[in-house]
Amino acid sequence: MKSAEIRQAFLDYFARQGHAVVASSSLVPENDPTLLFTNAGMNQFKDVFLGRDKRDYSRATSSQRCVRAGGKHNDLENVGYTARHHTFFEMLGNFSFGDYFKRDAIRFAWEFLTGELGLPPEKLWVTVHVSDDEAADIWLKEMGVSADRFSRLDEDNFWQMGDTGPCGPSSEIFYDHGVDVPGGPPGSEDGELDRYIEIWNLVFMQYDRQDDGELKPLPKPSVDTGMGLERIAAVQQGVHSNYEIDLFQALLQAAARATGRDDLENKSLRVIADHIRSASFLITDGVVPSNEGRGYVLRRIIRRALRHGHQLGQEKPFFHTLVAALVEQMGDAYPELRREQARVEKALLAEEEQFGRTLAAGMKVLEAAMADLQGDELPGRVVFALYDTHGFPPDLTADVARERGLSVDMDGFDQEMQAQRERARGAGAFANDYSDRLNIEAVTDFSGYEKHQDQAEVEGLYRD
Ligand code: ATP
Ligand code: MG
Ligand code: MG
Ligand code: MG
Image 1 (tube, rainbow, N blue to C red):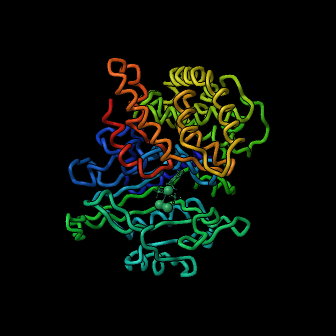
Image 2: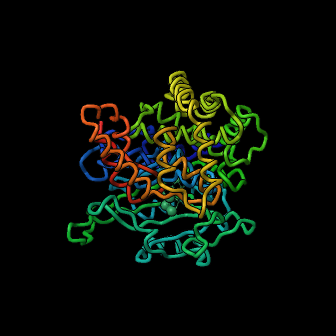
Image 3: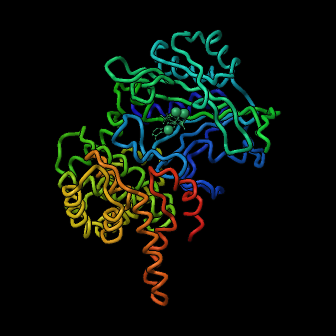
């Protein structure tokens, strides 16, 4: 089954179970200033779950475009390193707004996987929350899941919207890609490796957490589920990595052609194939590369892709030429992408031309600094100089450093930024010349550096 067919089979199955098929919402959340980008199918239904919004359906299904490249959910650093993470992916979901609960949610998921898709039950592994006897009984006694492939976990299986409000236990379904792949079952020491890959997450919204921490039962519990299309496509197509599925193979071939390569397993090609999706869809949804907020996250994604292109020996603009292949793969499911193709290409080309002027020079500086390095940490002043003079976002520098087994001194970088801010203040009337840089600093949403993130997620949005 092709990815597009799986997407359709999912929506059709849930439509038959009485769900309204709802279109994907934009990657830019409409009514939620606390969220950087749409990162789950449930985002567009948040107010329905909270009871603030009413719809004329109580069950819905969708295939939601998601980006996890900043803020609380950030998978940017995982791209190219795991078989299962993207910056952009599609989340298939079914939702119950005070309608059905655990029994049906579990039954639908099991029936879809083992019935519709025909997956062998012995390849699946299920987890529930330690406290959730109800879900455990449904899985073990009603669905007949083997106790050998079942576990109760704690933090991984509890979901909450915020410090207060709707929350509840969850249940996750994993696929065992087999003994050839290193990794242990969920919850084990090697559980984060890619042998057992999480495919579907069912959330049972059951409580309303009060200010004092008390879990008050919700009068009408709800269900929110999410399954990564690329992950289930990998399972269905008998491959381990998401990058081996039909959709990614097409993008990888386009990226290989554009950079004159033929090794489709090359990590840089994978990063480029991943990033063309997030960059193109973000631009489609109205994000413009810039020096602040969402636009800066987009710019970082694009520059990272260009750096990987450079690594493959590509000196000329190439990234924008991949949009056509993406439209071919995804334009039917997302007509807005096809509509915006020319605009997306133009925006990417402009970024390529702009960054292309300093990328090569910056890489030379970075190579020299790494060659001269004593120890295994790149000093903050190098990270800053690359950023300030060559437009290297710090996470891009960190990405290069990581490939050489080096880390970067982010505290040192922060100090340099601080010093620059003071210099700018001292410059008084000339401070305007620095406004661009000051805005970048205000965002400081450097992926991978958790301490910055929550703050950046919100601040970055209020800056304009
Ligand atoms: P993981 O533990 O593998 O990082 P997760 O628990 O963070 O996944 P959820 O937030 O539960 O993921 O999202 C629901 C589903 O969306 C996951 O079960 C997975 O199939 C898919 N998914 C999540 N993050 C990504 C990603 N970065 N790229 C591709 N698919 C993803
Ligand atoms: Mg995750
Ligand atoms: Mg998980
Ligand atoms: Mg999960």
